[in-house]
Image (cartoon, rainbow, N blue to C red; front, side):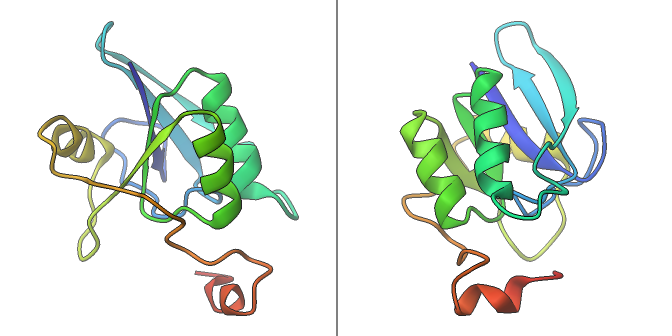
Length: 131
């Protein structure tokens, strides 16, 4: 199984970036090979559709699970359509990708059943810009 984690840098010991669509990078961990690879997020600098681009990217790399802090409506729809399960990083403190991977394996992460962040173009979403 491949697990994609949104991160701020290129390491399994990088902090998780809570923004899925605007994360700097993705660590993709292969549970069978016990190996990981990191990729820059192609949606990071997109003027629009960052969540969709990021979701399509990790799905194209075979991820069956995505772990992040927030999933907007478009990213959520794209990931769900690709059969990718989404899990939320607990808020309140910073976690490394390695730490959330351990929490996922222990069943300690909450599965996301709906978008948990408003979209950029929604009236409520404007407050999230620049965070």
